[in-house]
Length: 239
Ligand SMILES: Nc1ncnc2c1ncn2[C@@H]1O[C@H](COP(=O)(O)OP(=O)(O)OP(=O)(O)O)[C@@H](O)[C@H]1O
Ligand SMILES: [Mg+2]
Image 1 (spheres, rainbow, N blue to C red):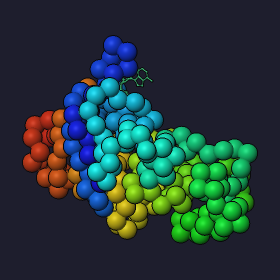
Image 2: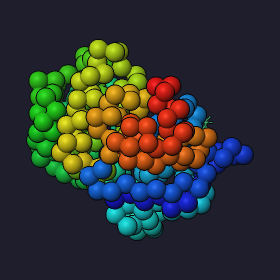
Image 3: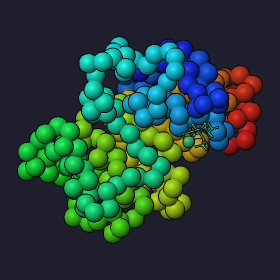
């Protein structure tokens, strides 16, 4: 579903991604972990062109994401993204946030878009919050609305960058539960997280980043059994 082929990226003189190669199969969940500054966010942001790369290729379903025929709108419909900070529009209610891209990117009539958005909110247990503004929702509910907003586009892949790290501890569980359900339903995901208990439950593979390099790309069961090499064991001991 996603393939990184010798991807390198720099921010000026800082080499942020060094020759990263790896692939994510359809239906797989890859949890990306690693120390702060190891380029986890940079890596997943390259997948939907939020960050340009200097060399290598990134393929989604075999198509290079930089292919000219593939517009940013097409790409971002295929690849959903959930940020640490939710990123909801404060002047729209939950329903409006979820329907927005259907209207403006998909050009769906508003009524139809709102029906699809309502359906998606229902699936995530948020139907009763549809007409709440973001400021009237808890952090966990806002993040679940953000997930609904990504899912309503029916993406082939969902990328999540530390989806629970901005939440109060009591809100973390509900968001992780939602993500676990999506994993169970077979959605392909790359998720950056420090929640190793969660990683143990949902991950098929673990990618460990260090200073812009993909140091460990291991089967999750092997990783948690301590069979993915000394670096992986060291990381596990610290987390
Ligand atoms: N827009 C930018 N301009 C310049 N340098 C950047 C930019 N974004 C990130 N960096 C640098 O690239 C490196 C990787 O950053 P990145 O945010 O990808 O790390 P991370 O693994 O996600 O860290 P964290 O766990 O703290 O979120 C860091 O050294 C960071 O300072
Ligand atoms: Mg980050």
